[in-house]
Image (cartoon, rainbow, N blue to C red):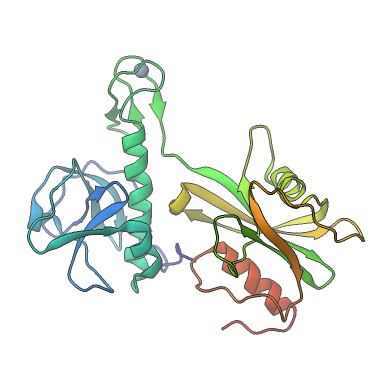
Length: 276
Ligand SMILES: [Zn+2]
């Protein structure tokens, strides 16, 4: 998965240490990030190259990672590229994970530039990763929205669905954000009922992952259809189609960055199909 970049290499420890020459700079412009070099494996700038105002965000392999402040016109030799696309395709897993996690922080800092309670300009906390209102004391932490994703089975079949916005042939699993007052297991059951009109049982936790693409924490589950009737009733505002697939019919995941692929491969392996 996208966060699997080796043991101990990502550290979100808070720091006020100023950037030094070789530290990495993350300069976002909306959803784009400033890079240089190779088209397929671009590099991030280092502080010594640009010397711009910045603040610490995290460490990768002990190296400081800093967020560039303000929008920068791309200096000669640099260019802006789409950050989510880079994170999905970059051959270096550490760069990919750092870029999407930095984007999550960048979006949050911009969305919390003003206090949601009194409207004053906020400031970065000097003691933790938070935005603080100097007037009313409101504290805002990074936005992380829990969401569940569930591999629902009926006998040896797996339920897969295609979102209205996905191209034909690209299937996913039933997923959705947790609502107030809910346990994760309740979210699993509600989403199954809302999206495809079925009741599920034997909800079992699998794994979870940070998913900076949508500011979420994806919590993966397996569950079983709680009926002999496999009829599906689609929520047409969300889904274009949904079907029960046999192990041989299940499309193999296109990459290994998401918990979606982990869930599908676990299901396939349980049915004797080896992971590629
Ligand atoms: Zn305030």
